[in-house]
Image (tube, rainbow, N blue to C red; front, side, top):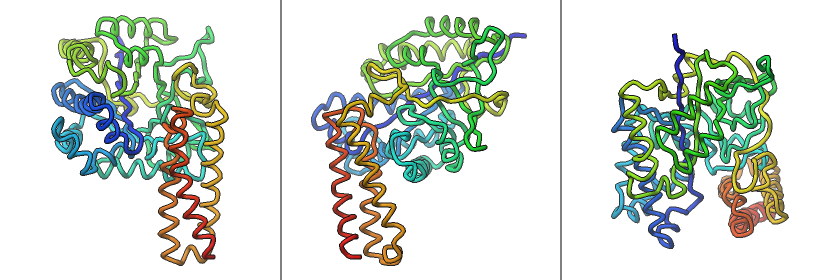
Length: 394
């Protein structure tokens, strides 16, 4: 009996603070393309409700913008955002994933800030959509095993990582690693199912592919895998709104018309490739083996994602990372002060500073290098002034 081939489709959605309004004002065509990219996901989820299974990782800061009355009003001539969000709430074939509220590169921010980013992001998704995110998508796929206990504590049931960083502790007789199955990731005796993202097909998903090429490539991956006789999982993940492929207003020439519609029609007709939600897959096929997950991110720009150089490669970026650590350290020191703990006015100042610090950790401020690092300081400097004000009153 032929074993099933499962496909888990994932889309990553994020905009840095204030960007939806900024881009609509300064590059209207791009803003319209982005908002319709978000809407197409839910429209096609409903259109193919019987066979479509879609994962959406969404940042809390994007949800802050999509629920902002000013954003809704600005985009009203182009799309009913509230109607779109309602569609997401009603689509039980969309599985939601959290990623940290302000989309930080977790290995580059202080560990003391991990829990708030995780919890705030989880709670924002729950508030907007009425259900908790199940899985966790590390922003920029930036991951280190030390994150596992914090991710589990925040209530997430599984984790996505780039396949290039997954090193199974068992290999086949030829020394090959199986990237078409789930593994247990572990740190400090805490474990979590880990799903490898197929880098090759994910790159095609982001750039452009058709259903025929996808089917042939999946069959090739399965045939060449160490255990083709076992149930196979192909997990593809990409940005869901970036690049012309997802933003094309002519849907027939974009992702949803050119690839996804023919693929769904094949599935309806009886395809050997079955769309699946990862929570369902894991219930049927829990991990059997464990793997070492090497520290790294996904491949962007000219980097492989191994050394975080896209976010921490220049002196300016490194100084920004140091600035985040410095101001966060001062915040935590003040939280231990007994007077601060009991004085409501000082607590309000501290909370305001905290929001600025967490927002400054947005990965985009580091990703775009020299041009965007100043946006990081636009948050840390007001935070520093608030912390100084608290210190002066002690």
